[in-house]
Length: 99
Image (cartoon, one colour):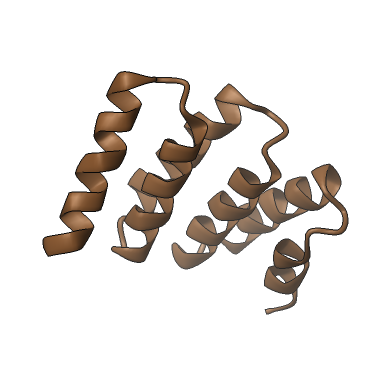
């Protein structure tokens, strides 16, 4: 991670330290980690979001994406299906299952 990305990561870490229940910070940190190829760390962030709010369909979808990027397609489908179950009209997991 370089420059701006490193600064963004530090901002998310500061937000999490200030409020350990701040789901959006965990989610955004997970996205940033995924974009940096750090999928296992990203999954940990998405898991934390799900622990904090078990019906967060976006975290289910994002975890599915990270799992898919790791080649763990069957697990990814489980999380895409979880997102669909929570929000049937959310297009992203439907599209991801088709790819």
